[in-house]
Amino acid sequence: MLTNENFRLIKEAVSTDTQGRIILGENAKTKVYRVMLNDAGQILLDPIDIHEQQQWLWQNPEALAAVQRGIQQAEEGEVHDLGSFAEYADVDIED
Image (cartoon, rainbow, N blue to C red; front, side):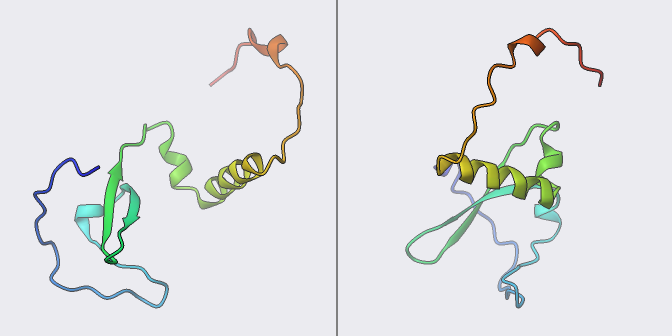
């Protein structure tokens, strides 16, 4: 999954705070990452390109939690068929 192995050192040593957070600085500002951990305990942050129209979701913890809850419920089969919404397919939506 690595697309480039040319890493450069940004900080020699950092410590996590009491909540496990690390401050990465300007290099990581306003980005969203996939976080991966290998068997050696190494952590890789892989930036995810998120479309501007979806960025709000990642910046809104309440909305993101609601979406994640919905995904979890769907995976567990907690779904309700609300029928067809075909009658609304041609309804104009104002921006």
